[in-house]
Length: 213
Image 1 (tube, rainbow, N blue to C red):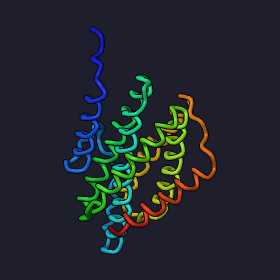
Image 2: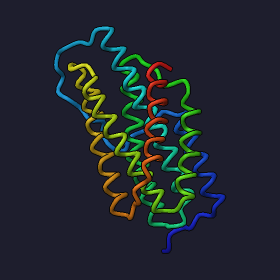
Image 3: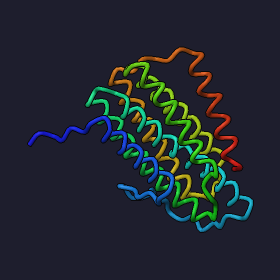
Image 4: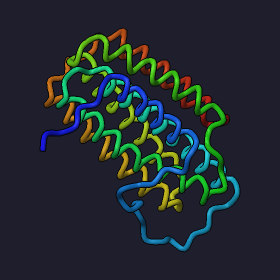
């Protein structure tokens, strides 16, 4: 049996549904949440607030990842690349579910600006995709490399006793690295330096704001 081919309208409706679910429903992971051996150390209130703020930033990053991959999958005309973007989005959905669950455990809330973050990331993903598949993949590589560095920073900042959050962040970092390698192997083109700098500046605004709001 040949695979069902979706029309452009069908794909657009699927993307809209995916976005609404990412923003309004409790995500469900396809993989178990990474676990760590309990340290027996209880976080004090200051440590809990810090961990909650950092995991809120990570949750925002996963909301943006859903938007970026959805936009790139929608815009490409290459079925192989569409499947690659959709597979990466599935793994990012695990991250979304894990960070959402950890926020609840820490008594913290998601960012109040998640709809804004999603809309902005979706628009950026469309722009990247319209530049061609090689540039779109290059945008993916640069995004994932920046996220890797960002997660490294969070591993330094998270309280030493918060092993649960650290296990999640470490697995996320490994997955992001794999996504970047897959995009490079698929033919990514390195982005010009000014675009990479602009991406870093935009990410800085988002992460700084999401830490508090």
